[in-house]
Length: 428
Image (cartoon, rainbow, N blue to C red; front, side, top):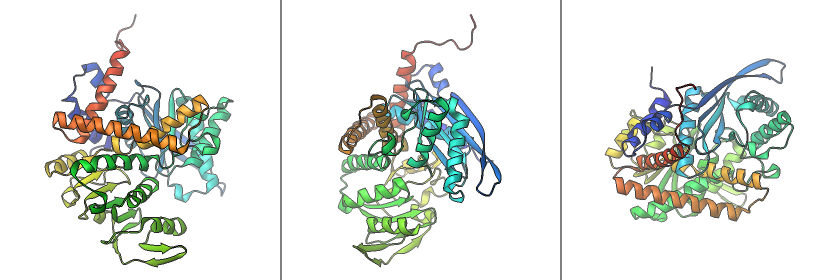
């Protein structure tokens, strides 16, 4: 049986602990989630059949504030995956100095097989099952893979019904019309773009001489691809769950996004107004995209895409992790030995949780910001923490991932120390 995702994720913690002076109590606490919940969600389907779906919510740590994390709808969702994602979120919030702990949730389901009404019943049923486990001051869900503002709106409304009060801050990533923040739907990609723009000049890379491949043409991957395209980068390959396309001369990302929205697939086309022409391109698998000879590789799909089995096929010089955990720990060491720069998920994709925090603040205060204000605050936060982690990596002569975990560990350790000694073992 292969090693669990959580066991592999924990290896990053073990490596970083060598560079931080923490009490044994603190390091031991960070190895385990605070609480885990498994629920069964009965849903009446449109044909009258009753189906039971498995749901999860894990609060990993809440030392620095209420826990925060998305809800994922995917056929492969498991407790192991949700626990790993909550672990990563704990460090992500610490790295960005956001006053939240880490959590994650999910339902084992293929949402593409459900009607809109079935999705709504499932989403409301999930909140019914976990309502006592979440709250604006306890644990705050958000969108993740195959969840969106509409689903967050249903979840917030169901929580309000259960609690008989208006609690917009119970979830983030809601529609703007019911308390969502401007810029939240694009925040993960926008934050990643700020990190890329900050780091590549340190290696004397300019946009117009940099080729990019993006694995995962969903919300984050497609938005980031267009931001990079607009900035002058040559995006030569993109892929979704069905496969990918490659054109050495570069792709017209806005046209591809319009085509996918209309046709639920991707094809290399170039559009002027309403007239579109197919561009010469190659068809790729997701695995082949990862092996392209490009300057920048952006894994923006799911975890464990680059492993010990395929890591030697990777030719990119820089990897920016927009997905959570796309590289396993064994592949990490090989990439580092080969001199390939990997910029970790707990920094690169933290724009989403950062603007979720902004949304929570706006909900609590009742004052709402313009899109310009949101993006200015996001840029400041992403650049500030990127620079701090870069400096840490240079000081310790370690990779950016280890530097990010060291940085997060220091903040978590300080918070735990500030709360004082807790005696967990003796009564009286």
